[in-house]
Amino acid sequence: MLTIDRATYDAIIAHARRDHPDEACGVIAGPAGSDRPTRFIPMLNAAMSPTFYEFDSGDLLRLYREMDDNDEEPVIIYHSHTATEAYPSRTDINLAGEPGAHYVLVSTRDGADADGTPIDFRSYRIVDGEVTEEEVRVVERYTDSSIPE
Image 1 (cartoon, rainbow, N blue to C red):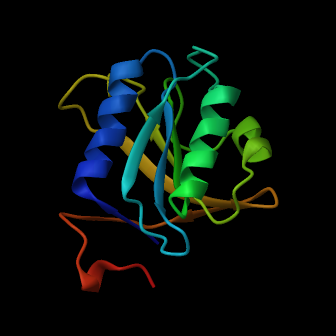
Image 2 (cartoon, one colour):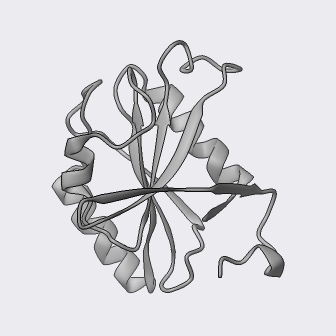
C-alpha cells in the first residue's frame, strides 16, 4: 500500500494538469528505507510528448547525487497519461528500474486536465516486468500511525 500525504497527492495532480497535453513526470524522495514520500521533485519531461515521458539525463544524475547526499531514495516515481487510463504501458514496464519504488500514474484524459474533474490516480509496484496494483491511502499529514509498515 502507498501512503501519501494530501499535499503531495495534490501536487502530483496539479503537475499533471499543468503539463497537459504533454505527460508530466517527477519523483517523490524520502528517507532511505522509510517508504515515506516526503520531498516532491517535479521534473521536466525532456521528450515533451503527450505519449511518452523521459527524464533529462543531467537532471536525473543531479537528483540521484542529491538524494545520495541526503540519505534519500526515490519512494515514488510518477507520470501522467494524457489519453489513456492510469495503467503502465509496455514502455513504462520496460523502463521501471527501481524495484522498491511506487510507480504512480495519473490520467488526464477525457477532460481531467481541467480543475474539478475527477482524475484517475493509481499506484503500482513493478518488479522484473511484473505489475501489481496497490491501494493508495491519502492522509492529511503523516503521524506515527500512518507510517508505512
